Image (tube, rainbow, N blue to C red):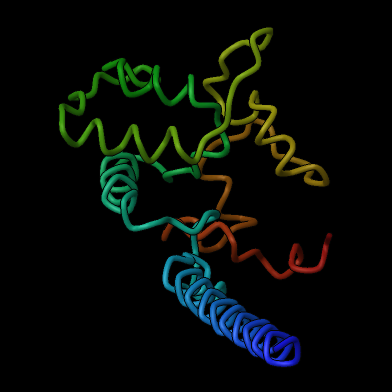
Length: 180
């Protein structure tokens, strides 16, 4: 009887180990499928991404509305260049750098704000809200080795970022390509 119990015990251990291996393999396959299905980076090859950030689908309309409204008069700059507080103030104020604008109304304003607030950065408590890109610490951090023209104007971006007119700030002019 003792041998029979030992044999059954070994069979049970072997079966348990087999079930455990099957569950582990199943979990790995499901996890890999889920990760590849939800990954923004796998869906969009980096060579095709023109904007600074890869934009998930839920923010694409906000980005399109931002570009459509801002690029009418000047280059639309990436949200990361200015802090969220600057973008919030710009969206709320109809006076825009000396020009009276027709303000965005909801729901487009909400969509633009979600895009801008998601891809911009926080402002320090001790920091003044910058309204010019050359006053932004983020802009300065993104351009550490660049001798910026004086006065700096938004349209100056095209000299280093030839795709800036198409909201592509990844492509650089040839003299900046290997300057890292």
